[in-house]
Length: 156
Image (tube, rainbow, N blue to C red; front, side, top):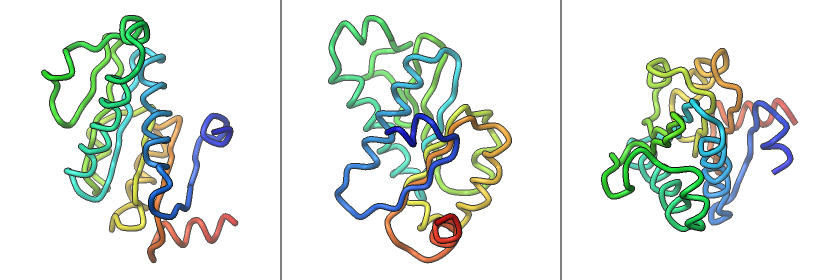
C-alpha cells in the first residue's frame, strides 16, 4: 500500500488468487470517491474483464457503510449505471476499457490500472500513451512473456 500511495508508477508481479486486483480497484475507487473531477481507467485485455473490474468497484461501493455512501454519492443508483462506468457526484469517474494502445487516447485520466498486462499485446504502448496524462499508473500481472515481464525484469 505504501508503494501505491507514494510512487507514481507501480508494477506488481502476482500469482493467481492474491486478490491484488481487488486491492488496486479499492485504492482507485477510494481516489475517485475522495478526489473531485478525476477519471480513472481500468484496462484489461478484453472489454468484459475491464467491466468486471468496474463491477468490483461497484461491489466495494455498495458494501461500504451508508455514511460513506452519503458522504460520497453517485450520480445514479448502482442499478441504473452502465456496465462500463461508475460516476460519482463529485465529477469523478471509473471507466472500464479493453486492451489496445489507442483506447486511452479518448480520455485524460488521472489514473490507470492495467490488470493482467502480460496478456495485453499493446500494453507497452498503452502505458506510454498514459504516461503524459496520468498521475498514477498501476500495472499488475501474473507471469507471461512480453513487455510486462521485460519491464519488471529490467527494473529489478
